[in-house]
Length: 342
Image (tube, rainbow, N blue to C red; front, side, top):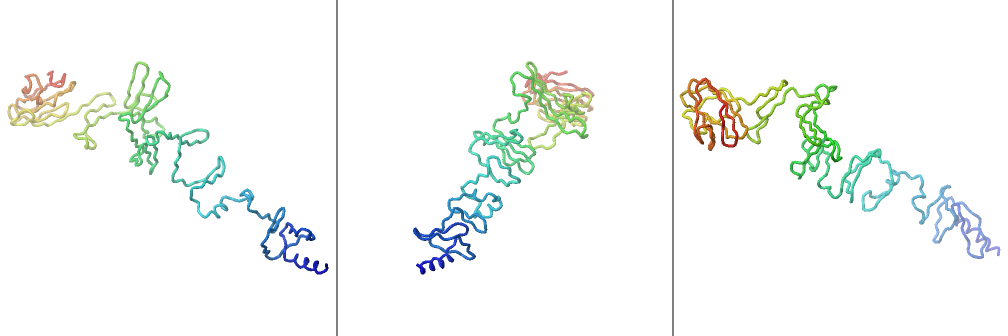
């Protein structure tokens, strides 16, 4: 009996629990708790209600991350071997994230962004290809991933690419407009184009129309010889008094010998300064209903005036008329073929 007690005392110095108990075999005396100052190695189980290390609880295989109640996001990131993958980490139902770097969002259904209880952005999944919004280098693209201007809209709906609306309510007055920032910031903007439509009338105002915008001091209309002509030339202008100035060509020299198609006139008002010999010629443009052409003969000889091919200037189709030196005449086309002389 004395030998057995000596053995148990020696054994208790080597088998210890951090703060729990070491349970003896059935029938053996209960050992008191011991504190170890070195390592404990065992091939069996160390049982206890709570295991501790330096007064801190030690987790076991059934504990979850809630065991580490004070773990920060930075500490969690430090033990992740790879922050990519197919798994998910849910941080909360409404977490606040500061300065996130997001390279792509691929929602499977409708996608919205809400701020202060307002939803300023909605993307409908069914039509996402048509209403894609791109922000690129300060430009906004709608339907295009490479906007070349501040606003670049690409749409397959023909002319109906943009719509300005005051309200979507049926049978209601609609007003809309486009303005330009004034030179003086405190002033109302310059009215570029305005529109108003009610039950019986629809009005477009260019260069003003509303007291909320300053009116233009001049409105110029430009045209070009081809679809690649930059700048163009003034075809008509309206000044601040409402006077209309039309396109003028002066200093024209009549063609000798002249015939149909020679000396084509390209302005509304044409001053022929040189008629070297009698019946030197000019040719009217093709007739178009409402087109008005004035010809001034400041030459010293009679001027011959030809219609365009197939047209009638008053002497029958494809025949010339004449204009005496020092005279002028106005032709108005009343259809696509015939000119009337005034």
